[in-house]
Length: 174
Image (cartoon, rainbow, N blue to C red; front, side, top):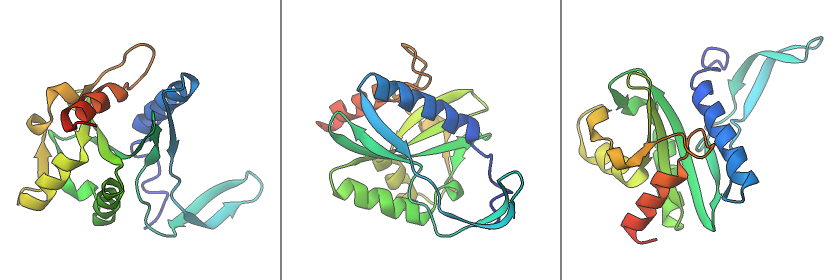
């Protein structure tokens, strides 16, 4: 799969998450890092130092991993222009990684941006996994996303996802 054809997809969402993660670190709330996808450069412009063609060396796990006040977390960032989240955007190796992560007492989730509604949501992995395993549908509809897990801009945090994470942790007794 060529890197250049998919390189910028979701980059605005990831930039908002990165800015938020920087603020979380500054305020000692969390330490979250973007997980780089290993690539193998094929064409390199030596003069400019740019990679013009590359291939993924292996599958990545999740987009982000870190710790929030002693709780290990990992999450995927997904963006959709549809009125739902197509499950084809979530790969089996990601489901497997998040399953294993939660078996180790970590918290896995997705941050989903619905461009159609200009809204961001925290999606608990448990809810995603139940739908993924039990439904014959290929899309999680927008209406399935719980309003209590809507992510807002607040207190200088672009995507203050720690608020819905806190709501979820309270609900599951952590």
